[in-house]
Image (cartoon, rainbow, N blue to C red; front, side, top):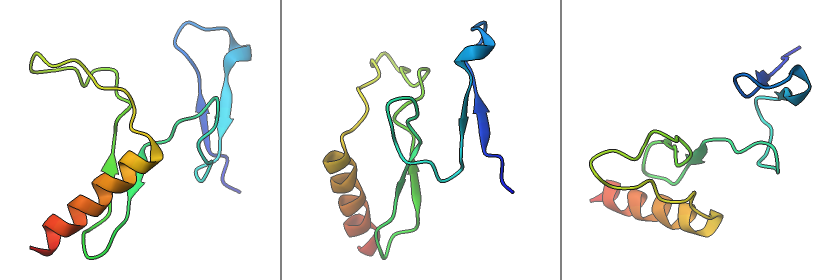
Length: 82
């Protein structure tokens, strides 16, 4: 059986470990990378969680809401069809 992933904060106590199944939905202790699926565009992973994405003198924006992520998927698919 698939054991999923073991997630822990570096330097934290072992009791802070969380086991996450590969298909675990978003929840209070787990935020998966978003998968944008909208034909005819290919599947796109949207990583809006990486703490080191604040490059090029621009601060990292907050995580997108579900509606915002869906809007981006829709715009990406529209652009892809051009």
